[in-house]
Amino acid sequence: MRITVSCESSLSVLANLVSSYGVHGKSHVVMLIACRRFNYHMSERRPRQCSGGLAETTTVVKELAKGELEVSPDQVHEGKVAVEGLSAGFGPKKALENVSLGFKENAVTAIIGPSGCGKSTLLRCLNRMHEVSLGGWVSGRVLLDGEDVYSASTDPVSIRRRVGMLFQKPNPFPTMSIIDNVSAGLRFSGLKDRNKLGPMVEECLRKVFLWDEVKDRLRESGASLSGGQQQRLCLARALAVEPEVILMDEPCSALDPLATAKIEELIIKLKENYTVIVVTHNMQQAARVSDLTGFLYLGRLIEYGPTQQIFSNPHDELTERYISGKFG
Image (cartoon, rainbow, N blue to C red; front, side, top):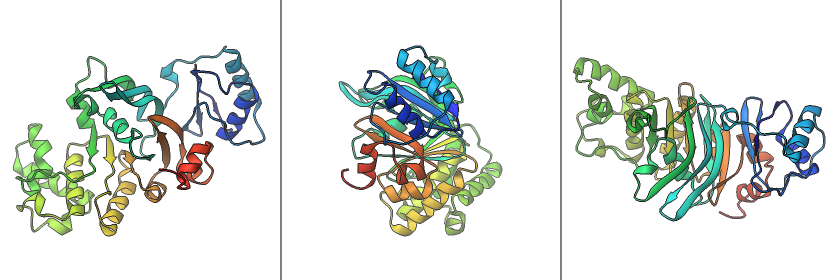
């Protein structure tokens, strides 16, 4: 059973009402609420107690408790990208279980959680990279602008062009020059005119604050750059094909503090034109760069909401324990 409530009440108010009307503890109950144009997630876990409520919300929760209210999954999520009932794994091993959330357009969403909780798997499911892994499987839906990216009529290559990805370890093409690294995707797409490629490469390098550092070295190997420069080069390469969504899997884990600061500055800047989804182990980084944060644990989405709320007043005890460093 799934419901969507549109109102100005807080998630904590709804959570208290859910508990009061006996919805807690029922199997297969997932509450999804859209408040102030954000998507929040709450699973069967006891929330913090709070006071207050709205008549509209109370009515909805009563209907839910009686089993009288059900809404189509199409109505649940809003956002540039949304996942509905997503499960994924490798062979018999399940890495994600029934994850549902929406990623807001022109915002940065951070996915946090301990190692092995399914963060990278979730990211790779969004652009159909997971399915190319040995034994990889996916069930559920991933929506991009409302269209299921796993439908039979969808071209995976076109999805990966619209949803670019930056990996944990910088991976420039080692046999290519800096300029050829950035223009690779454009050339693979059929653009061969060097008079057009040159300005586009410069634009992409400027977007990632790399142009001034490499403009006199464009014919050198991309592998000759420092780790932080290589990561920004890879980002420039991803931006060259004009994606709509950018996925980042631990983009700063191998970088020094100065290079990390530049990547974080980039992440904040990029949301002006892109939807950005970042997986990170670094709690401070998530707090600095993201607008929304989702907490995964053992393949399940425990809590999802505005970053400030997640870090200052989490609704789930498990989230609070992780944020405070008691495990993970």
